Image 1 (tube, rainbow, N blue to C red):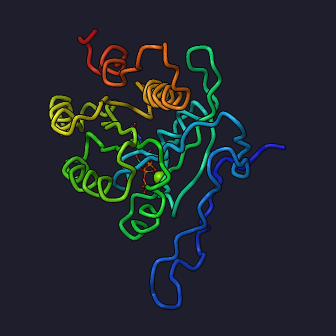
Image 2: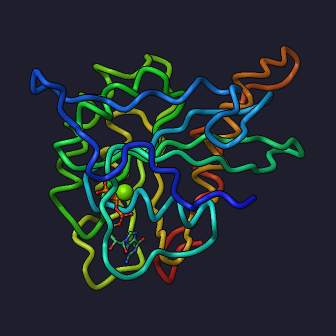
Length: 238
Ligand SMILES: Nc1nc2c(ncn2[C@@H]2O[C@H](COP(=O)(O)OP(=O)(O)OP(=O)(O)O)[C@@H](O)[C@H]2O)c(=O)[nH]1
Ligand SMILES: [Mg+2]
């Protein structure tokens, strides 16, 4: 039978506060391979977690990747966290990615904190039409440093590059920030689909490589791969 498109774990209206007034994180999904949240069994990679300010396009990026569609219309802010799986083929091998779509709103921050530790990869997003979302990247990186595993795979994404008229963050600014922190970077559009598949494929390749640990295979270099494969949004980049 078909699953509902959004496997919302924390339902709207569910009590978010414990009697003591503290945030009540939803129960974590079982670790990769347990098969409860969408049938990931065996060679499942991830979890890959999407983080960044509210409205930067995390859910839309995931929907574009998962279903090849753009969620136009009114903005439905994520409550708590959503989980989705997607199978993709990496170097001829089928890889199941488990993806966690977090809520960017401040009031869910402690929910997000509870999930960092189990994430194998993080896609950190800002919105190129929203300067504040870009300025907040440093704070997100501080948080990631505090809560995530030290060897977590991290990538910075500047989303909504289709909105050329409203762009306020230049590609060079994103590149500079990413370089400063030593993380791979690309610009994306959930609307046009630019680089969406690539972002997840790059992560999947890195995770697959790490999990297989083949001694004779040359090390996969995420930075180099992204640099080689990334496409620009402008008219004149090749
Ligand atoms: N033009 C354009 N709009 C986008 C793009 N991605 C998302 N949007 C719009 O931005 C708004 C927010 O998108 P969401 O994906 O729901 O944002 P989010 O990051 O999941 O927000 P939270 O769930 O609150 O954390 C929606 O109105 C989307 O239609 C994009 O690539 N281009
Ligand atoms: Mg969302």
